[in-house]
Length: 279
Image 1 (tube, rainbow, N blue to C red):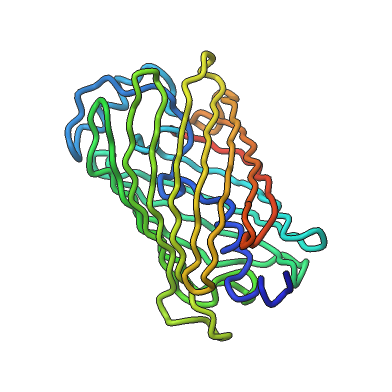
Image 2 (cartoon, rainbow, N blue to C red):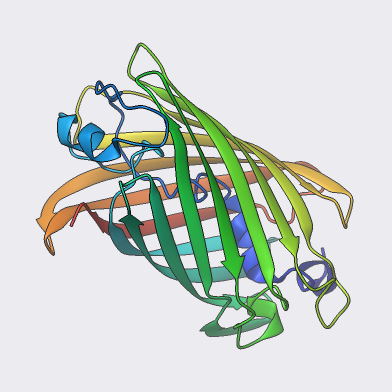
């Protein structure tokens, strides 16, 4: 792989490929199935109140306020790597079935080790279906062309849309496959590189005996339509609740990931983070 292979989409795109999960879902933890009789698109406040455990974020259909910071290191090749800091904030509104998420990235790239701001993004999340057994939502994330350098952003306005359907299994686990589409809005960046990527994601949350801890498994298949490349990824998140902080429920997590396939744009990554929910 050469620097030319990396530059067109920018490091945020590469990091996003290895990080592909329910960002769309704005998720982070809760492995118990809701027992309230919620109906399509409503009564989410009631579901939250009747939940017996802290909403830690792993159930993507239960939206909650959350804020945090995370850092991801990505090994592109043996000789090239990149780092990505992200600060984020999520605010539900209405009956709790909708939310906005704001993300501010700060990254470097294999082409320049200096850190700089990337593309600020705003995500709209809508949980339009929720029952005891299933849930569904769609998201739309809009990336502003705010990157200080071309190698820390898409180099154009871009969108990422997703649709997922969740099953709350009898054993307490959650399975929520998703379809994610990432595309440019300006027909390419200054270098002429266009953006059009499809990700099929298979998000799974097992029910653990100790509710203080959680795991998520996130295998995915990604196809870059512009470069005609297909590759796979796997991320595993291990998190732990760390008690009350800043008026909410805090947690720490680590998320190692690996990309595989001849067309993979990176080798592996690891992300660590801290967040506060339910404040």
